[in-house]
Length: 260
Image (cartoon, rainbow, N blue to C red; front, side, top):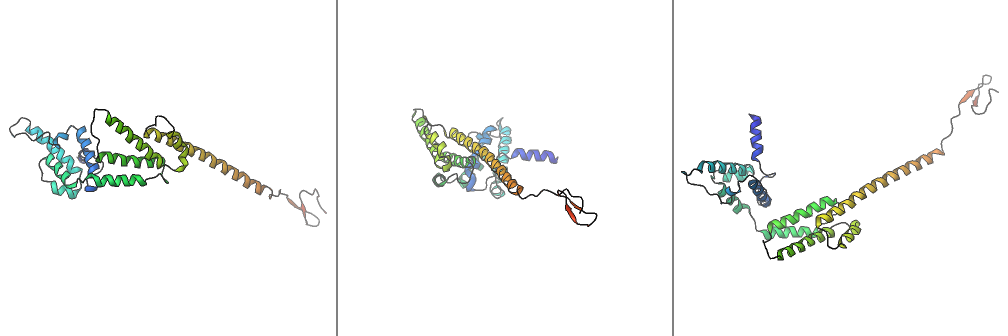
């Protein structure tokens, strides 16, 4: 029974991080929507599948699915928040209340993301760590300010400009040691995507690691050889000592003498 309960608990947890407040509501909401869409239950929170009348043939099925979604939401928020929505009977009402309480205006969030991007550089981080952090900021900005849908072709040009801006932001933040790779990327026509540029720089980083490893090994071997050479001149050959049977004095083993 305990094992089965554990399996049910794990299935009820849809998102990797629970909702704790305003600071993570945006990412939590996105994760929950992805999970609900994957389970074909998103209409229970967006209001597109309202509760039917009690005498309707789908009423029992709706109640069962609605309670399932409520259970998922309760398992995805902190206990402090759970206590304030525990007695709601409609998943859509819970969803709307959470949005009203924790959703913030996008302008401050976009400002913080832009501010961080302007000062973000590779520094002591690897290329992968730097790129991942930068891409996270891009994704946050896109989430807070989604692009409109357009069929006239102008949106495609705007998207190309944005992709080019991201490429330049990535290259600007790289360390100066990658100046050659940066110049080669900028000389390409057309410019590669930011993902392609990232792959090029990571490949150079990997090659540098291999080269540095070989160089370090060579230097260590040279150091060992120099050390051995320094001590080699100070080593004296072993010469056994013998005692004369007549005078009992010591005789050098290399002298060839057997006595006094």
